[in-house]
Image (cartoon, rainbow, N blue to C red):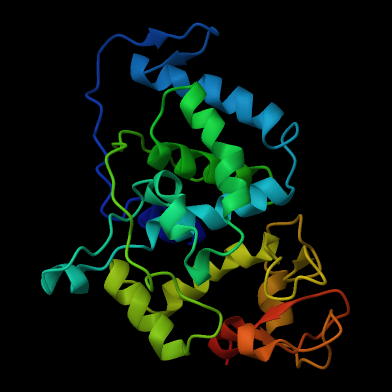
Length: 270
């Protein structure tokens, strides 16, 4: 279910070009066999990022933030704005990396500049588009976590993009209605699909809502891609991991020591 929803987000308004099939398989420089020679570069990218971005395939902070980056790039599309004659964003087009000087200033994207700048050199090195690289790295990072999904990847996005408008990425201070309206506009997603998508928070953490406790996870098993996030989000909150509750920034009371809870997660669960 998660894979279906995340894959759909990854394809939102992206110019994904179907590579024609061939009867003869190609052999890549590393000895891998693939249906099309255009896919060979991704074997090289995989080896490179597993070693040098994800620290030998670990489910660490880079993997977590790469998964977050998928969503923030892909959700930035609004057919409603387009219908009003405005630019509604390009979805998973890599604009968040190409125009980090603009999109990186949006409140919802706070803290993503680090993973963007960590990823950028790999995309440039292997001459792949930012949109493709973001989706690929997020899929690989998720698979590094125990129990993580194997997310299909489609290449062919252009590097031609413009900055997405502000306000298209949901904030933890947003109401449930506003978040549901946003995901419905972006891709026709319904409430249950939004809940499925939130499974990504099982390996997520916060850094900027309460800077005094950076890296505080959203559940008690942050390296496991499991359902514990859902279980613990239903528990009553009684404490904060930091010295104070930052409700104005989207923090809700947490049920467990050392665990952070987003106000939006709390409200959606109820």
